[in-house]
Structure formats: structure tokens, C-alpha cells
Length: 430
Picture 1 (tube, rainbow, N blue to C red):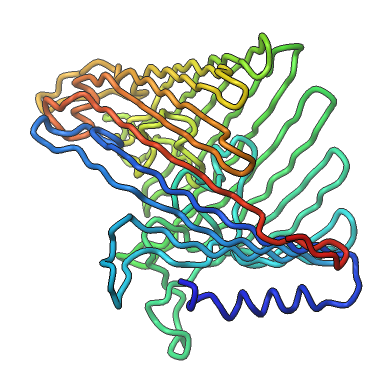
Picture 2 (cartoon, rainbow, N blue to C red; picture 1 turned 120 degrees about the vertical axis):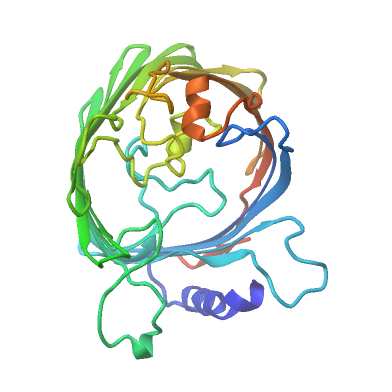
């Protein structure tokens, strides 16, 4: 990995450190994040005779961030691998080594700027657009983005147009066909956020264009909605709602929606308890030619629908929608430690029918998530988690597994995030 990224990194360091005297800051940081996982029902229900999985996956990042009066530059290089993916002596490496972020932003003045390149999109409660930080590889987008960041008001507008690398650049002389699975060909979004003294409100409009590998047609889906917060003494309210229209495929219209609301209560910070519900529409068996299952698109789904990722990670429950009644609690257990405890009761929003055309219960299961967090030292955090789910026949049917074993999942992750080098006003700190 070092040889692969050595030249661009050295050039960036040289340009920053040797600049003439201007108001600027350069920061070089790193992240080492190994995570061990015991998977015995993570993301799906396993047959009773299936063996559990155990592995260690590690994310390693090197981040360079340059900030000046007129422009900013960020470069983030990453390596994602399973321990043991290659032998001790090797000439090929199947692990992921890529540029996670590479963008530059020009500032017209104190409020207006434009950024171009590969970057994270992380908005509001990350329901629709999130950086997927839980996943080792994360999520980033290639686009151009305009930003207005004023006092109490922010407006962001982004435009993306993707092309694959099947045809190399010298031979790409015609056609704009795009065939990368799980990604859009074109996407545009506009986000507006307004703050008041005790509340905030965001509006989002996103147009998502997918190209069919069968007939090359492009279908567009529009998602629009809001996210809001309100503080009332020791209580914080969060609410969001979105509606989707457009086409999922030629001749198949979309009419889908979701809403969520929760309240967080503080007794003595940082201890708190949250209660709420998320409601996402699903496809109905008797609806022909229309898709009614809401797609949360490019959000961080791991945050919302249970840490075991049985729902909306790969859309693994048959577009049945979801009603999630949840309780989340955080307790301080020591000077540097805390415990997170989450409980979920899941229901399908649309009817579940078996092969005999009999309706099954809408109850999908109950999940418990526990996470212990320890701040070992500045920049070093240890997380240890355990989750279990009590599944129903309905969940086994939509997962395609009969008489499966009780899903369980355990994991341990330690994160090191040191600042390696920083300069400010041409004064270096190591």
C-alpha cells in the first residue's frame, strides 16, 4: 500500500510544508481499526446445522487535510483487509486499497464555496445520506457540490454523473452506458437546513437515476422530505419523514413513504433513554405494477434498524417494509466508560403470505443490542458488543430459511486515531 500511495502523499506534504507565509493549516492523521466478529446469525437467519463465522477485519487510513483562506484539500487513503487474507510472502493482494476521499473546495467568500472530487455525504440523522462509518470501507461519492453556510442557514447542492472503467479512457469515444451494481448513474440533491434557538429543520430533495443493464434505459426516483429536532428542557425530540415517487424499472411506478419519531430523556447527562418508532412502507402482494417498498438509499442503515443488520442492508427481507418500536439507553459505567442497551420489536408493514397463500403474523422478531464503550486514552476507544434476536416464522419465511437457529452476534473493535503532524501559520507540531 505504501508504494502505491507514496508519490501523491509526498507531493502533498511538500507543497504544504514549503508554502510561503499564508494563513493555513495542515493536519496529517491516521486511523487503525481492527474489528473481530463472531457471526452466528448476523444479517440473516442461519440453518441449525450451519457453522458460525469468525474473522478479524481491519481498516487502516491515512488522512491529509489542508485548510487555507481560499481553498481546502482533503486526501484519505485506506486499506481494508481480513487478517490472513494473504500469506506472509505474497505477490498479489485481494484486499481493498483505494482513495476513500480526494476533494478540493474553493471558497468564494466566508459563506459560499464549491467542492469537487470524492467525498463523504453525511446529513442530518444519516437516514438517506450517510458515510456508513460502521462498515470498514465506508461510503463516499464522486460529485461537484455547492455550499452556502450562513449564520443559522445552510444550503448544499450536489451533482454526480458516474461512468465505469470497463472501457478504458483512450477507447471511451462513444456511449455513456453505466453498469456498476448498487450505484447510481446520475444523482442530484439539494439540502437546506435552518437553525433556531431550540430547534432545527432540514429539507432534502434527491433525484436518483439508475441504468438498466438489459435495455440501457435510465429510470429516476425522487425522494423528498424533512428532518427536525426540538429541545424541551431535558427532552429532545427528533422526527423525519420522506416520500418516494418515480420509476424503479420501466413500467413500474414507485409510491413509498417512511416516517420516524423519537424522544430522548436526560436524567443526569450523559445518561439518557430514547423511545421511538420507525415506519417504512412495504410492497403489498395484491398491488400490480407499483412498488410501495421504501428505499432508504444511501443512508447508514446500521444506526437505525438493529445492529444485526437484518433489514435494509442489501434489502434482505423481501421489500416487506418495517415497523420498528425501539428503546435505546446509555449509562455511564465509569469515568471513561459507558454501556449502550438497545431493544427493538420488529413488524412487517405489508402482509406476509406463505406458499399456501396463508397470511402469517406481521411480527418479525425481537432484538437486543449491548455495547460497552471504553475510552482507553485520548484517540483510543475500545468497543465490545453482543446482540441476539428472537426470530419468528415470518422472518424465516422472508429470509428463506426454515427452522433456523437463534441469531446471535458478538464483536470487539479498537480504534486508534492519532494526529501525526500538524502545522498552523507555518509552525509545525509533531
